[in-house]
Image (cartoon, rainbow, N blue to C red; front, side, top):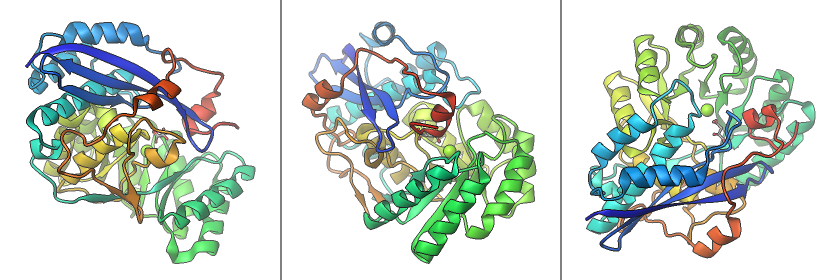
Length: 387
Ligand code: LMR
Ligand code: MG
């Protein structure tokens, strides 16, 4: 089987918060008529420049056309040469590698008539507990709206939340206080996520103030790549500490410094199934846990994350992918499903990812390419639509 073509379709989809994200749907076509689908999710992250999508499509075609789609390891190696790892969380090259890797896995599964799970050694679970994100409040005025989100999502079965915190601790405390008073033990706060916005000592101060409200873990409580700071923080609190994995060098450093308890692994931030499985194995070898993170993917990307999570033996914390609930729209014919706060892994009997695209939705949501609006930096850091 040979790859004959590759296409990228960019769609722009708002979240219920008003924040708008752009994603590329990847199609890899073959001479046997099988097409693999992938997702390069959420390019709407800093740094605030754009990838030229037609140029990227051309580059990827040059690399892929004529190759055997089952040569996934070799293609990933070459993609790694073209889009090298950096020490940056939102490196767009990683999103690009991820979309291609997912599409190759979807293609291989479809060609063999099996779900991607079957290519990866099967499943040890068929659903993943997830938490709904509460985006960072920079002003007290935003607190009430965030409590309303908890109320509405709890009614839908989401009983675990994570809080982006740290810029306005008064607002964080007001939120946690209101949630504790109104919902008590019906609601769990999985984590405080500092998004690398504070140095470790400031994060420690805020954590000490907020921990009495009951949180399971603390994420990203030091500036990016400050492994010593992360370790200092970890040794100063008795809560588990988690950090995203965005390169193997960075993961290796976190292991060397014994800086975290749990690695937050998402396909999009490390480069697809192959890379994510490698990161999960490194975590396991180092005696660390894993949670499945997210950039907030559409259903295609979320299905990939669910399949990845379904095969992990060291998934030790509640996971994060809730994109299909967060966006007002999707391009899937049938979106992935959530039940009682669990993300259901797509049916194991469905080939590939198990997700079909509704192309009329792609047409409605399509934009010419990636581009930025007049978003403010704080909005992009916090994933909010106004300050
Ligand atoms: C989001 O887009 O909401 C997330 O990717 C933010 C994050 O934690 O990186
Ligand atoms: Mg995070």
